[in-house]
Length: 332
Image 1 (cartoon, helix red, strand yellow):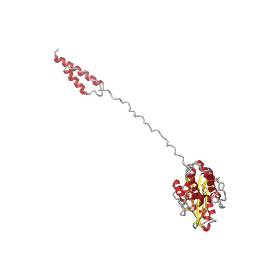
Image 2: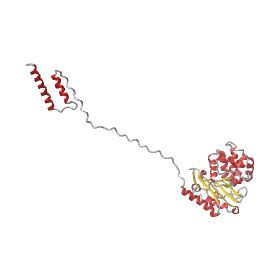
Image 3: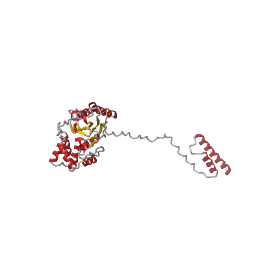
Image 4: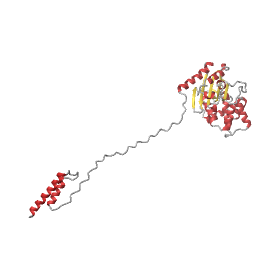
C-alpha cells in the first residue's frame, strides 16, 4: 500500500471516530471546536498531541449568603431615680395661697417666702424670695455661726455655748449686743454672706443696729442648708438644739410662737424668729426647719406699716399655715 492510500485511510478513520464522538456526546464546556481542527491538522503532519483535558464544570450549588447577625438588643440603662417637684402651676398656686392668707389678715403687707425640700433638693414654693427685709433677731443666726467659725469646727467653751443657746432659743438681745460688738459688728454679716454665698444679705446702714441687717427668704434657705449640711456635727447639734428649744415667751416678753409654731401645729420644728420695727415698718419673720429629720426649710418674711405692729404676727402665722399642704409629711 503506497503512502497516499495509507494517509487517506488514516484520515478517514479519524474523521469517523471524531464524528461518532460528536454525535454521541455533548461537547463538554471548555472543549472548543478548534481543538478538533488542531487534532486533525496535527495528525496530518504526523504529530499526535494528547487531547486536552476538559475544563471543570463550574459548580451549580446554590450560593449560600453569610448568616445575618443581628446586633444585640441593649436595654437602656435605667434612669436615675428622680423625685418630681411640683409643677410651675402648683408652685404658683401655693405661692398665691401664702400671700393671700397673709394679706387676708393684713391687706397691703409685703410678703417674701420660700419652702424648700431638703430630701429632694426641690424648691416647693417661692414668691418674692429675693426681696430684702430687715432681719430683726434672725441675724442672730449669723452672729452664732460667726462665733463658731473661729473654732475650726470645735465647740467653744461651755460659757460661750450657753450664751449661744440663750441668744438663739430665747432670742436674748443683750447677748447679741455683746457678741456683735466683740466680733466686729457689720463685719460679721459681711464675713458670713461671703462664706455662705448670700446674694441679698447686707450689713445694716447703722453699724449699731444689727436688727436692720437686710436678708431675703432665699438667703435664709441657704443659711439653713449650711447649718444642716456643712456644720460639723457638734456645732450643728448646738445650733439646732437651741432652735428646737425655743420657749413660747422670749427674753423680752414677746410671744415668739407666731408663724411656724402656731401655723403648723403638730409639726416638729427648729425656728429662729424675728420681730420689731425698722424705720416706718413693722417686721415679723418666721424661719426654720420643719418635719422629720428637719426635711423642710420654711421662711416667711412679712412687713407692714408700723401702726399695724400688733397684727403682723397673725399675718405671718396665716402665711405659714398656708404651706401645710406642702410639708404635710412633717405635719401628720
